[in-house]
Length: 350
Image 1 (cartoon, rainbow, N blue to C red):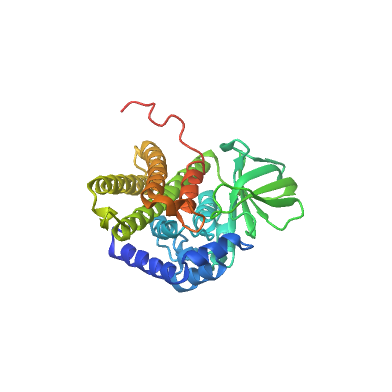
Image 2: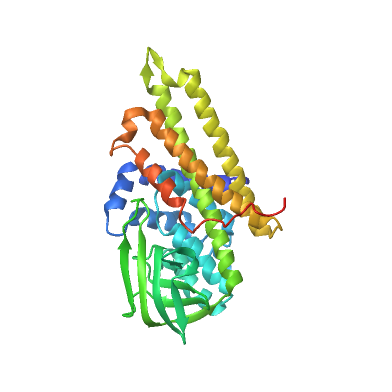
């Protein structure tokens, strides 16, 4: 993502803010807090860096820097495991509204999203996953339950995916019930939202818009996984430089050098796959479907592999609750299921 001077500067700025205000203690406070994320850190990122406004067009109060700029932030957040409403609201929520082509809704909702004053949550998956919406529309009213909703318990506005298009509804409506979902990954809070004959406003959109939203979700998640995997490798290399065994740092042993070199190659290939998928997505390349499936699968497997090796190479310290390794490991395995997986992506002619 950091292939231009502007993107590199943005990444450096976000990383500096996270290094100063998003350390391990801040993450653990966020995980155990009421919101599930560090509200002060999110406010800082919005006000000083403008992260929530990056993917929002200028006519709707945003910066107009495009999706790629927003994913630079996603990658940096992945390094620290902080999960403010960037992925769920500033990326997926914003893109969902834009994909409907509803200019009135965009003008009404997105300026506050850009400021960080409004959080959107995309209600999508059914009990079996993202292939079938969990909520259905009938005469402008919504019925059903959306599962695994990012930012679902804190959002002011819900964007609901149905087989009849996308709908908007106030999260505080009496016909809406929200509950936190128990998850493997404590750093990313998910919700279950039930609608009972809830009156909603149809925004528009069709099956093509929903498919496009899924593609964006996969690319965003792939980029986040690359950032997290890279952070795991960096921490592992640093540890092997300081851990002494048999009178020398364990990072000096050839067997461990080879393992870490293999991890580096794996991460760089995943980075290439994620960035290429983003490029094909934004340029509407004919190979986009295969590129997206490749990035989705390869980045998920890479993150899982790297976290497993992180635990092994850190030795006994990595199996303690106080160490961050278990948080990355849980995020890796949870992310592999988030937004579903490609269906037989390689079962097509080369």
